[in-house]
Image (cartoon, rainbow, N blue to C red; front, side):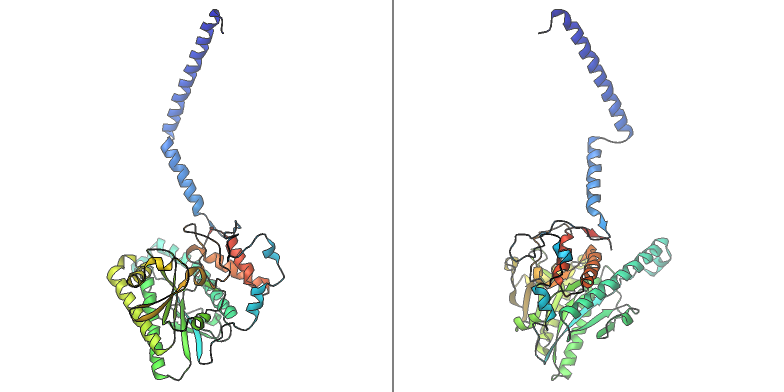
Length: 408
């Protein structure tokens, strides 16, 4: 206990300390007001920094933790041995064989893809400085688009060799000489912009299907040509012709995911090449376009086709029908429709949203949507550099990229 004589000294020291603290507080408040830094603004700055960090786009592969480990049926990349592995695995041996699902001589499979560069909205804007900069960016993006297209075509040649043709619907005119010989280059006079890209894509598919119907009508004895309509920012890692053999009764096939509002994805559409199937599938797609124009004009950019497809399907199937993640067959407006799980037939590396539970071992298509196209180019280059038909290493590289965004 302090002596009675010491109390005045203690009180004095406490008083001085309180005065110093008060002075420091006044000075700090003055500095904060001059620099506009309060608690709220500081918190806002930290949030902005966090968002900026999440938006960082990389120019090379960033190795992260592999998702899906310890989950049955998922690819396991437990260490870096996949990067230098020289012993081919079972997948290599299978791909080195002839195609596992060769159709009969009376059947062929062809791919159809839309390869366009959206145009500038108004001609008067061409002379502005901003649009000149846009054109420079478009030149860079076009060169990368070309590389993405070549990777797509080469992956088809590896996974489905010999009998697969590819039709490219395009408004380009300079790339044709750089493509493989068995490519059908189909120029289009349509005017594509980012606002109408999805509806124009569907209408372009319908035009081609109409021509296929006429060809089938006039040449009924010719081989049946099944069609796979797909985006070109994909790497095909297995034979999609198997679908026409494993599911012999469908007219048209879509891919689905467990998403209540947009369960159906149009990135991969398969149409059987018989006259009846072509006719029914075309009629269904025309109905999708009609609903698109009537109900979803506000979503012309990217989601309108998915919303229109969901609107048609909901009268036949509820979203819970897709929760099991297995193929579903149903009749939609007299059209025999097959729904295939995206996780197998349209697998997409996530960009930080949604569930990410790794890559199934039986995956057939890797779809590099959005900002992932640089990753697609680098993954395909990595695959070609290996010198063996081993998609396993490339899949591990994609899995190792995690949720990183890539510059494109």
